[in-house]
Image (cartoon, rainbow, N blue to C red; front, side, top):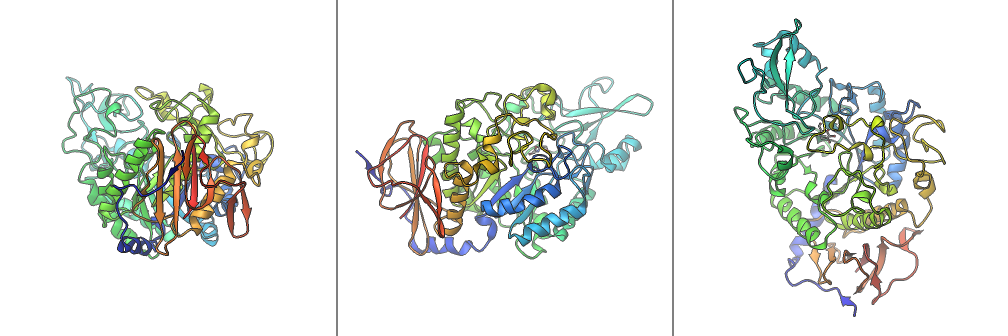
Length: 583
Ligand code: NOJ
């Protein structure tokens, strides 16, 4: 028996007023933007040295416009010794020569704007590089120097200062402190680094640090960028006195327990200050927080009206493929973000986690840094469904380069090519972020598949020999491809008034293991999205015109996209499939 989708009794009734409020907030581009993360090392290599660069990205911008995203977020391209792939910055106002020049950055921003795309850049305020001028000076000047106060230098514990000042562990494994060695070889003070030793933490109690970052923000805003992704946004302020945690294996506590180095109340003052800077500029400049907090409610505190605009929804990213858990996290997110007037955001992949096409092909609970390829077919099928679910939810969505190609993680990278610093310090964490950072395939039949200009040319991480069929060229025009599914979904999301910005979904009654909800537009039109997570076909009937389904080919028709074949009332939805209907 097929089940008719009707409004679930417990779902919030949508008043006229509620609908009007939703349509009004559409004015702010970032409340419904689809933002595409470009990882500059791995997107497009313009000069053929095997490393992606800014000119390479600029040439490929029309691809992103045609894909249908609203904005591009660029991971760091600043001057850096690359101890952590650019998250160790020596000069926040300079482009690393391996990525190009400041003129290249300027060209990129201009070209993006000409194409109607916004540009968000990373800012890395929690730590810099140990090669940053401030840190080098602080080391040179020695203990007691005011220049050391811009970082966290402390004498060690123990009779000879041989023990770290407290018990904090680095996110990349090992102690979060490294002892300095003076020019004469004597061991001295220790300095704090929540990540690699090459990434000393700034001391945000120091005025100079505030002034410097205000100036860095203005530098990039003056260049015309539309916003910032704030790295480790929850880490800047540390608890007074840097108290011990009293446990080892602290990584296991991250994201669930309060930590003295994360999510301290004082950090919000920094963002109030930054908001004032952003608001000085015309055109809705925004900031999105990378804040791993114990709860979504804590993340929402970064988005109070006088703070930042968005935060990544990591709770959503880490939710397994399970109807009940997904529905709960959607409700939690909408409630928490609604309470502060911020848009919910949704994300499935980024440069720090195993791609979702691989995660969903592995058993739930396997984590976010996997070395198992899992069931590729199942993973891709679920990934396609997960994308339609995500893009139907109210708010803003983040895509990670290559997910539109259905790329899996490269789980068999040999150890000798790996570069992730957490792999080398690995303790408590498997340190496998290289697998999602492999350069993406554009065209051709052999590596680097158009990533660089020459067939057979280098790429900084090797690409699998079977990626020819996954390239942009191979998938373009193939109605069954993941790329065409993304293009169709993004075009519909853009054109349908019920999709995009919003604050609520109306859950519909559906069989156990099926998620079904409706989005409504002010003009009375709506979209229903249903996702079958039962693991078996599910019978459903929907009074509406099918727009898109994740298990079928799409084909372009004038003015939009439609599904090939028919799918009528009473049909079944296959396992691990999502469907959109216009109602
Ligand atoms: C989060 C970034 O996404 C990650 O790649 C980096 O290693 C850490 N922050 C440290 O900057």
